[in-house]
Image 1 (cartoon, rainbow, N blue to C red):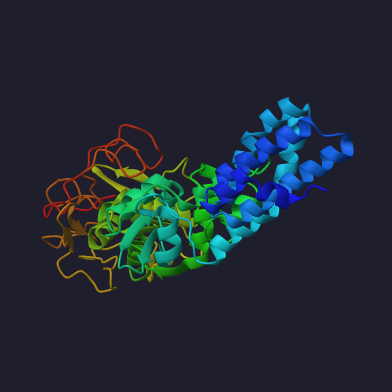
Image 2: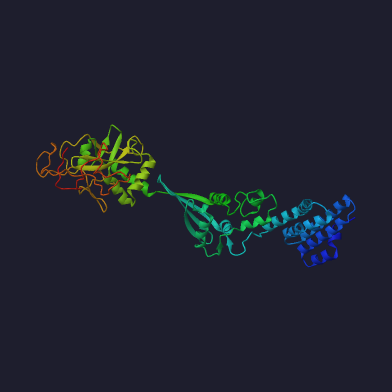
Length: 459
């Protein structure tokens, strides 16, 4: 009876085996199998020979440091065996795979369990670095309704990088940031991709075997394939992420505007609001109309922009629903005076009502204040900003005792303009106050000079 030892102890196989040349030994086993199958007497003898040969291949695979190479050499020789014996090649290769499968499984698992980590030929693979060095990811988001959160990556070797929330889904973009920050020889290759060489027929990179053998847990198999990369990096981020919330600049600006409204003096008569540069309360639409200068002052103080504030207020849902599109403001003209108001919805919980609301200004009131950022009155008749000039509130005191409630000025000059827009367009893309009126009609008068001390008040 033929058994595995007869193959292993043959001269040629034994010689290669003693030298540790197990691939050559496997080739010699297959050559002997082909010769003996050609002379085999009947099916039973053929089955016995193939069993003995595959048994010998199992032993060679167990003794080799590279059992996969032993199996592959035997498979390479299976075509020659099939020609000599008249047996089907697929049948022979199936027997070889069955005989060596368990050995290959044990070998690759021992290699991983024993600390023989997957590696790249040179340097440190990106997946190795991420799995081994990443300690924490801090997701910093702000209280702004419109926000672009950032991720701060912290590594054990002292590396610190900051990314947008999506850049890590591009593996090469992340590699470039890390490679320039670490002293390690980081390479874009992934050590986990070495597993592809371990896969058998029918196994692929998206399957269970690859997931089990790659670096990290099975839930994140590392690979440069876009879908697998996103799956792996998302899992790593989720595992090591914590979130910090900070007060955003747009939130600061909105809170400044709220304070101005809450502590300010407002008038229900729109003409008075235009002529005296005041906050206007519109009962018909349940809105509070805020001069653009209030917005500009908040933007200057927080170092943000009208456009950013517009986006923030629109996202918070505090702007008027009566304006079309993304508009938040409206230009209003009264005589020679024009001013732009930002219209906010008073029914919204976040929109405060002004501290003082009067129906109209019946008498000369001097410098009626709509409030400063901290609620204190403006002592110089307005607030000066580098970009937007002086903002004046209320009607200037008449130079004599002439009653100004009849709409006439002291010298016939145009009344003092409230809010003046230097920009040709507002943050919503609409034309400035020189072309837009309360009804939205074109042809309004040009803005009066802001803070004109000679201007009277009329309506």
